[in-house]
Image (tube, rainbow, N blue to C red; front, top):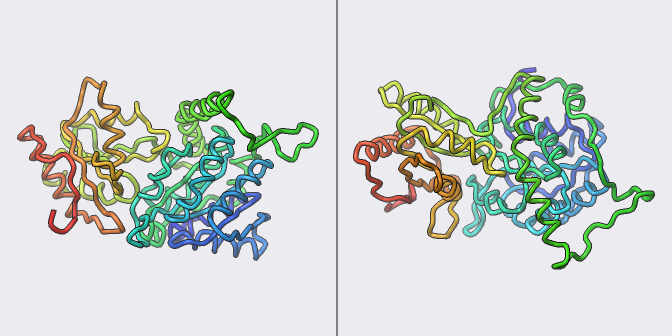
Length: 390
């Protein structure tokens, strides 16, 4: 069915069709609408979910952990400081191998207080052992919310599906919904290995685990992340075969003969593709790479994509505050260390706190990258694009 939905509405629709056993949440802009709409589905009897309105995000994710440990299919939604308040529990969820799914609407972290989009919230949690998927538009947000449930349950790690706040979350687009009954059919029942409520096979959770066994238990979580990408690819193929929409690990756009390219995440991927089309009409051989799966980091697929070009502009919508540039920039420099082919790199930190990035500005970035290709020199490796006085 073709409908018009915002990103928040689309994620809420996906949750309605998934019909999770438990949703625990606390409202925060711009993610409030996801669980507000879902709460109305609960009130109207459209789902059988146990909805837990918690007193904070820390409590919400704690409730999710308890429910998931008891064998329930569990989801929530949050943003920015809300995710930061969940930070302690994020590690507990991944350490306990609980397949919780968060619909995360990306928003800047304080201070200063800001309610608009950048990726500083999700990237501040990148090392917490959660799968992280960045979506480009509303259709992808809807589809990925459904896929993430199956990915998380097969990998046995929790997952964040992210949209860009007020860009995807509140921007209305045409999307195609799957028929209601087909979503639970495709997902199937959660396969439970251990159940906290199984009194005939009791287990212990949350125990003290010092130097005698902590390392071995943490190693299991690391190995789960190491083995996650083939499962993610399998689930994406299964989704495509069932519903006709296929998604890549790394999205390449007009990269076959590209000489320079930009690498980005989230909604800027869509803006960038329009800029690529405009530059192509001018005869410029440019392309775009979009990092869709960010954790685990797709080393092989990313290397295959970014080593096609002579110059790569890496666009980060957050800064590591380390003096070393953005997250994507550092990840790519790391995987290129042992690569025989190394493009020249330039890091563009952009769009913090929701500052717009336009098609024309991305065209300007392409012009800068083409100049680097011609001269062979990177004048400045890290720039803060769009900042007054830069």
